[in-house]
Image (cartoon, rainbow, N blue to C red; front, side, top):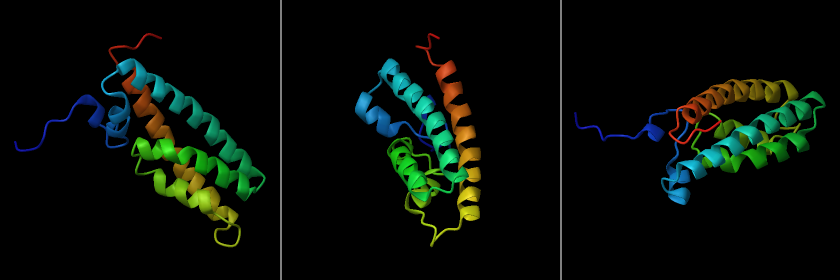
Length: 130
């Protein structure tokens, strides 16, 4: 088998920790702290996106998506980044509210899978202490 070996952090097709490792090396505690913060912030931001959509506030949706993008890019969450990029730039004249809501539903499904994958990684981490 000529395929390169991959460590546990790279097994996921949902996210990739290469960028995080480039900043933090192999410090599992620091990586876990970043992931816990990401999970907390993502849950909060998904609620804020929902609120913005409920009142059809495109500027609010743009701002929240903009805030979410850097970490999703760092984690290379390829099924969420393009959606967030579209939401970041969405305007009433270019994307009607139903299309924006459909994007949010797709994002919500993808984020749910991502959260489960990260929660599994954190629960099985050697430094897990909760």
